[in-house]
Image (cartoon, rainbow, N blue to C red; front, side, top):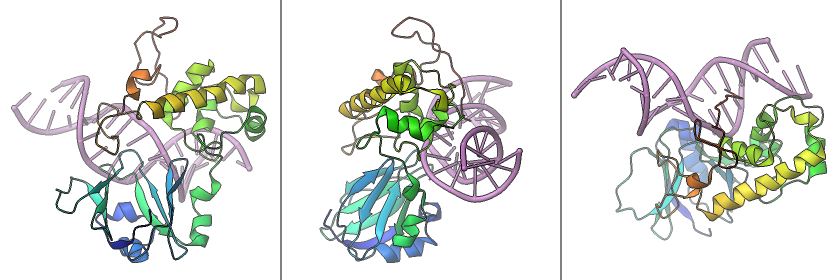
Length: 247
DNA sequence: AGTTTATCCTGTAAGC
DNA sequence: TGCTTACAGGATAAAC
C-alpha cells in the first residue's frame, strides 16, 4: 500500500482474461501508485492513483507473495509487479482460476464485483434482511449461500460447516427458511469464519493455500463435516454422508 | 427471472 | 512402474 508498481509483467494470458489482453493489464498498472487495499467477498480491490482499480481473485489455487527479485520464481508464477522499494509482488496460480485485472469505473460497474451481496465477515446481514433476499427463491440453501450476490465471501467448505452447525439440511429450499432458522445460520457464519481466521485459514492436503509467511493454516482440524465423509460426527457419532448439491 | 449446467485448468490421488 | 481417469472448485456464460 502506497507503493508504486514500477514494472508489471503478466506471464499467462488466462491470468489477464478479465481485461482485453495481458498487455492492457501491464500498461494500466505500470507506474501507478496503490492508494489502498481492500476486499469484498473473495475479490481483492486496490484503488490506484489514476482512478483505475486493481482487482484480483485467488480462484482456487492463487497465492500472492512478496519477495526479493533475487529469489527463485516458483512454478506457475503468472504475474510479477516490481515495486518502487525493489521488492516484488508475485502471483502464483497453478490452476489459473484466479486473475489480476485493472478496471476503470465503467468496467468496474459491469463486473460481478458490482453485484456482490454484503460481505460475510464485515457486513453480515441480520435474519430479517437475509430472509428478504431469500424470499421467493426455491434453490437449495447451500446453492444460495454459495451465490455471491446473496452473501459475498462464503465458499464450499465454510457453507458446509455453517449449515451443519446450524442444523439445516443443505437441500432445504432457501425461501422457506424462517427468521428463526436463519438466526442460527447467521450465527454459524460468524463462528465458522472466526475460528477459520483465528487458526490461520484452511490449508488442505494439497498445500494450495498458505499464510503469507509460508506456514500452513490450522483450520482443517476444526472442520466438522467438509472432507470428513465416512468419519463419525463429533456430536452424535453418525458417519458423515457425502452428497453433491451443486455439481 | 431464477435455476441448472458446462466451461475453464492442473496437481494430486486412485484405479488398472 | 507407468498410464489413464476422477476429483477438487471459483465465477460466469449459456441453456433450461
